[in-house]
Each structure stands twice: as C-alpha cells, then as structure tokens.
Image 1 (tube, helix red, strand yellow):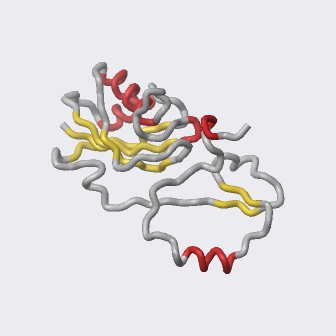
Image 2 (spheres, one colour):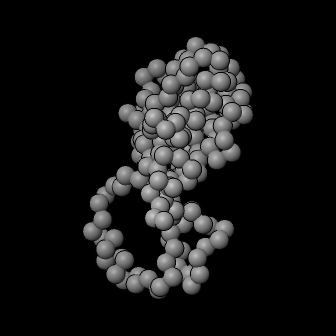
Length: 165
C-alpha cells in the first residue's frame, strides 16, 4: 500500500530535508518516527528537497507499507515520535502509480521581509529583516527579471554551521 503524507516543519534546527550523515535532517527525523510507529524500517520519497534552515508547509512525501492503520492513527502515532517543530498533518492512501515528486502539480514559495527600525522578536528566524527603507520601485523592476521558478525558501537565520561568529 502506498501512502502520501503532508509534512510541515520549522527548518531552523535542521540540515535540510534530505538524509545526511549528521542525522540532523527532516527526512532522518520523519523516517525514524515512522519506523518507531510501524516497528519496522520505513523509507520516504519527497516531492522536493529543502535547504538547511528552510521551513515547509504541507510538503508531500510518499512511502510504501504493508501495515494497515487508520489514517488518523498514522498521523497521531507518527507525531508522537517527532520533535515539536515537525508534524505530519495528514495521511492518505494513494494509487501505487503516485509519486511524490513525479505527480506534483506545483510548488509555492513565500518570502517574507520585514521593514522596521528594530530587529524582529516574535518573527526572529522566520522573516528577513531590513532597517533601512526599501525602494519599492527598484524591487518591482528587479522582480520583472526574476526567473519563473525558485528552488528554496530560506529562513532569515542561517543554521549554526553557516553563522558568522
């Protein structure tokens, strides 16, 4: 049986989506939680990767399993083993021909920039910040030349491995 899952996460603490030797990725944590819940090794395929520090809402993954459970039980059971900044939002059976990446119809990215005289507090790490006034006309002119698609959404704060000391 093939399942699709909708995953949301705050990526600040992670080295991106895709499994890495560090074990500090969203995929590593998700597969560990799924495996604990299912009591067997579970592997996932994602619709797209994210870079270190990137957040996601409803990122789609799929996995194959022979274990039968109610969809809601899969969500709640897996979330029991996930850190609080990663959550399975939904789970549903899909046809065996479904592929998280190949069947994707689109992706949407959001970039949030706060213009304010002081640094953000509540939004720290979730928005970019500039303290000087932005030139809206220049930004609109530049946006007219941007590529039709983008590849990632970075958080405002780089992961510890890329921070300047």
